Image (tube, rainbow, N blue to C red; front, side, top):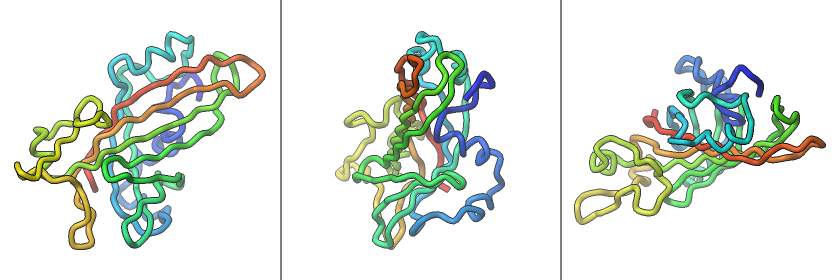
Length: 203
């Protein structure tokens, strides 16, 4: 990652290419296991989400008004257990606890400020059911990972996503993407975290 300021750090290494793909792109890179749910996500920095790394002196990070898209394909076992996330040809471990899809990954990156460093990336996605999406006014909350941010109230007809007739019922994804830079090389690299909101429809 250098001064051209790409959309992100790890996940976006593949997403930059995926964003320009036609709808047939996922067929070029078969997913592991059974495909369960796919979201077309748009990520934008949260309010002051880049400040920590900018204040640390990193110039080759996304611009405050930058945005980028990526297609996240979650797959796993035939019984619906989610185990992987695929972005183009990149496959990462993933999980689902009934409320949040989660995938993390670490990889080396190079920065003008300090040379070689590592980046630890976390992606959290809350799959949203049709009734939840309507109750939320078709808007994702600022922090969908916060307790109570996604409504669930069966008495009011607001149901969580889940399996119905062998199909994972969700119409949208609301999430957060966090990239933390950490020191790995001989040169000191300041540790900091960038946070992006990530949201988009289920394909």
